[in-house]
Length: 104
Image 1 (cartoon, rainbow, N blue to C red):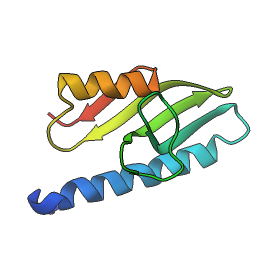
Image 2: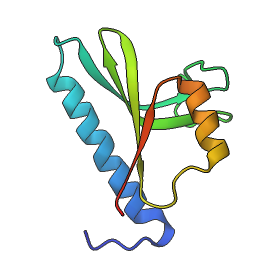
Image 3: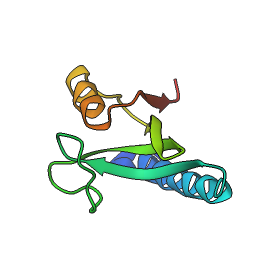
Image 4: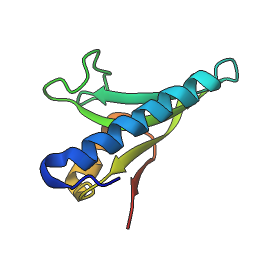
């Protein structure tokens, strides 16, 4: 894309594009019982935050919901992945498997 990784520009652009694709996919899936929730943030304990990136929340880029039940999450990584402790924290908040998507 020609963007450098300086100051997170590459990551910001990649995440913006990923969110746009997830919203578009969710729109196409309407009426099927399957949806994609983009950019959900949760507090410790699992409560969903109505405000993205609120203090004390952690988020994932996409959650797959089937018939009202979230079954899996995905998080785009353009830099380092989660540390072991952050991964444990994220998984305890979302309580579903979450895959980190990265380019190796």
